[in-house]
Length: 81
Image 1: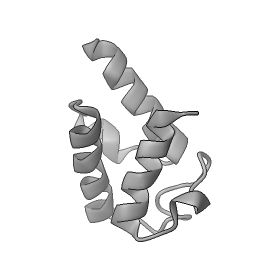
Image 2: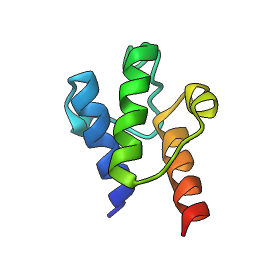
Image 3: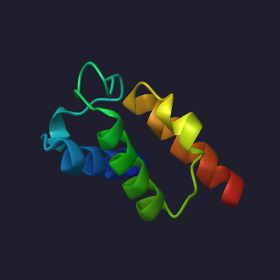
């Protein structure tokens, strides 16, 4: 079970008001989830709170897919441990 992915799905589902079971790693924030920059910012803030990490905002805004967001979380967590 991929706990980071499950937590990320819950955050995205909450912000975007979608079913977390419909979220896949290859979904794009813009095309598939119809997320705008405010949505992405809310997701970023929730990710930082949930995972207790600090994410570079410029890098975060370049993320296109759920998989890329997951990699960003794992990289940030790895750096802090």
